[in-house]
Length: 164
Image 1 (tube, rainbow, N blue to C red):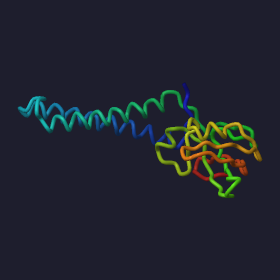
Image 2 (cartoon, rainbow, N blue to C red):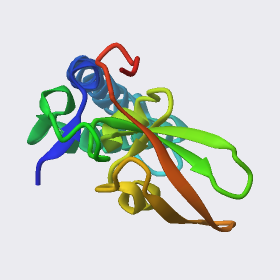
Image 3 (cartoon, helix red, strand yellow):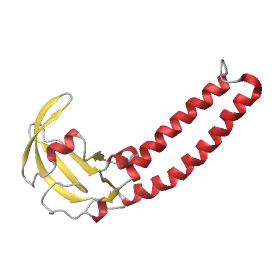
Image 4 (spheres, one colour):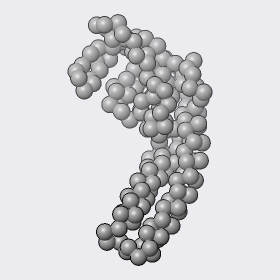
């Protein structure tokens, strides 16, 4: 299954994969040294710590490699300007309070990389607003309750993190 990702996050993750692979090779050496130091694998704190660190690195590498399997670049998407789609920033106004919140509907890798204001297009909130049009009222379900919000603005996400 193809996952959407911004071009910048794709570049960052490609570099990070190389670094994680290098660190995993280093951890493998540490594991071997811990075993060869005479402690074996039983009651060997150095070995246990090295194996734990190796498992953490391998899990992160696996997660990132999943993002990179079949990426679709968000900046290449061009949906209708008046519809909430992946790669758009949607501004919602709470009908009761008038409070406004904006969300950039990006990929899970973008969210994990900490892009400002990003939520995954796979998240429950994103699924509630995808396909909505300017002026639509959406009943939003969040962990602490429900509220109604109007879609007051839809902007195209820009590669530099700006909107417009």
